[in-house]
Length: 358
Image (cartoon, rainbow, N blue to C red):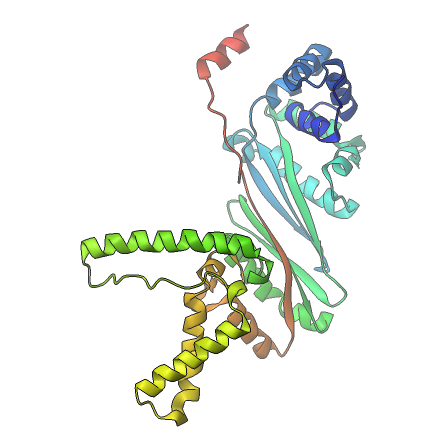
C-alpha cells in the first residue's frame, strides 16, 4: 500500500473540500490514487463540494485586518471561481470574518484553521456550508500575520479593488517613535502594491542567483542595443553594459576601485581637486545605480520610490528618519495578489453542460 503523506491529504482536501479524515481514508482505500480518491469522496455523499472543487478557484478577494494597537497585521487571499461571486456580500463577509478569526485565534497554518471553531462550527464545515450556499468552490488559499516587536509597529494597505494587499512591519528606537512612522509605512505599502518587489534588500539575494540574472540582464541589454543601432534614434542612445547586477556583488574593493577610477577621470579632465568632494558622491551613486539594476527590479530598498522616482526607497527612508527624528528599520513585508501564480483551467462548456444534464 502506498504511503499516505500529510501533503497528499492536504492537496485532496483543498481540491474537494472534504474533511481531513475523509480525505485520508479515501486515499488509503484507493492506494494513494488522487483521481480515484476524488471519485470515492463523491460516491460517499461529499459530491456537491467535491464537484465544485473540480473547478479552479482563481478569482476572489484579498482581505486585510490591522489590530487596533497596530501590533498585528493579517492578510488573506480567499478564492472563488468567478469575479461575480467575489462581489457577493456573503462572500465579502466570509473574507472579513475569516481574516479576523485568523488574527484573534493566532492561527498560522491551514491545518490549524480548518480544525478551529468559528461561529460554533469547525471551520472546514463552516466553509463547506458557504460553498453550498454561494454555489461555487471557495478556497482559503493563503494567509499571513506580521507581529510588531516591543518597539515596533505594523501597517498595511489594500487596493480599492480588494485584489491586492500588503502588510509591513517596522522597528524603531521606541514604540512612540515607531507610531510616528505609521502613515509613511502605509505609503510604503502602496509602493509595494504597485511595484511588486520580491525581496526586502539586496542582502536577501543569493549570489548564485544574482550572477545568473546578470547574464540574462546583459543579454537583454545587448539585444535592445541591436534594435537601437538599427533604428538610429538620437533620443535612444545605447545602454551601457554594467559589470555587475546587484550591490550584493559590489565588495569594498570594487567600490574603492570605482572611486579611484572617478578620481583619475576628474584629474584627466583637469577638474580642481578642491571640488572633487562635491562631485565624487554623485558619480559613486551613479556607478552603484548602473551596477545594481537587479536590485531596482526585485528589492524594495533598491527600487525607485513611486512618489519620488529620483530617490530609492532606501534613500527615502533615511530622509524620513531625519524628518521625524527617529530610527526606522523595515523588518518584513508580505504582498498578496488574487490568483497570483494560479493557472486557470480552460473550461469545456459543452462538456460541463452535458455533465450537469447527466
